[in-house]
Length: 446
Image 1 (cartoon, rainbow, N blue to C red):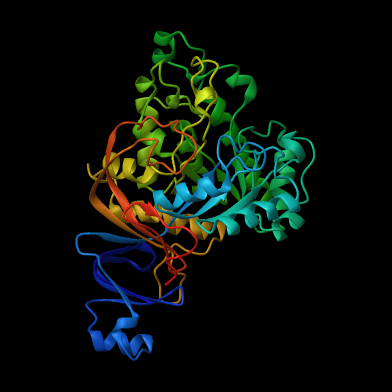
Image 2 (cartoon, one colour):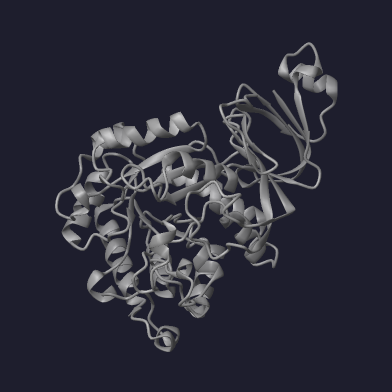
């Protein structure tokens, strides 16, 4: 049992933002309210003695519902040298994420029920963040034949995506949106026209010309967004646009929502914090897909967040080995490591300067993901699972490989100091991290 005192509770699902106490029992929220007295706590929890309750003073800190990341690459099965489910779910806990969605581009690809069940089982064995599998849309990511959607959903998949490889055939995409309606799950679209993208490695523009690197035009993303929102309108299917990065995409999604299309969208922190002007040939951490945007695109992304066009934040955590990322810029793989640094980076880069509110941050990274993908969480309502983080806006940390739980270090924040971190993470009332240290073997069960 747990009594958190004097903490600033931020819960947009209840319109709550202020100093409160929080009671937890049997892994669930019992009550949130102003300054409980000891006798009240004993009565509410049905106890004989207050000594049975773990008491934590949260003065000066925030309490959020646990963050939910809908776009994570855990690499297992088959690429465990980059990351595995255990290391990735530990990294999630350290970053403040109590639930994550694992993309299907593993080896083998998650395109059948047994593999989705394997992901869930490995996550249960790890005992850290909850992991929800995302199934492939097409068998083997070949873009030719749909997977058995109902069967894989029954095995635990919460969505379908060929992320990492956009579906090029529009008829296959149309069929996917049609059949996925039977499951109630969204199709997550990686919007990239391969013919337009070509062999580009960054956004096409003045920065790519200056660096002498082949560029990917913004249209490689936006033409596919246009196609997919039109297909979603035609089929009535549920569509989620991954990693939006262009102003045209934002405009198209805004239009589609205005027309009543069932579409949601995410943006990655790195697209909000960096532009193509930040790219250095010597740092392949900045090589991501979709590529870092222009300043104009970045401003449109922020406006899309503020007006509700873009529904959520997602890290697109994509770990790679040091050897892979040490290759020349054109040869290195796309991808950035994001689980452990994204919350602090967004706090420092967007919340502290006043570009977004703390309430908006929690809405984007907890409330909306829970509602869109049907994942438990996103609230501190009485009766809800006690998936929570205590966030210290003053905590500072230099990002080093020694402290990271992820196997990968492909982050542009390496050796840099960030401020604003989760200092305690609970999953279903279990304290899995305290003072930035991960607990092991469930020794912190409340």
